[in-house]
Image (cartoon, rainbow, N blue to C red; front, side, top):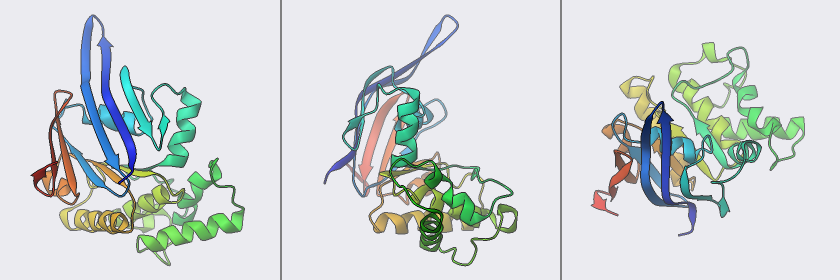
Length: 234
């Protein structure tokens, strides 16, 4: 399989007054096209720091992060913003939908800023409708978020993450605000997308949610302490 994401000896150090905090201490990791990977770890393990680097929201102190063959470690803010919009589809715990905007318009938003897709209004609308259909929300496009359940809002967010056909979908605690039944439905949606070939990286602290993934990576104190595939060490 071809690696969509390669991390080589990533470190991240923060300075808090006179104290140096080492959030990552040399993380090396490959994720292949079509994988479904969960990253787990307790508070302070480094998983949020790793997520921010994967999502091009932050840069490592040292090491390399290569996404689809591009070393993004040293890119400036504007270059990382372009990579984020075109290569990474984000799904957040709090949905992050515009409240007075329809589901369809929420899904269309990344296309407006895309450097990869140059679509007219009709093409954007059709693309957004296709993505809503992929997550089982046909006919809900004109509803605003307040007219949708929590699970439906998260599926709108997943559709929005898909609309630019990103290299990876990065889901940060996507079930954190949902009940157990709705969480399962959202995770089944992600599983279905993975079965269709989409690469998914999931950040979670819940083992039952991580178990929906095909591969589980556990961090502690800024280091990978386990990497399991279908219950076996990868």
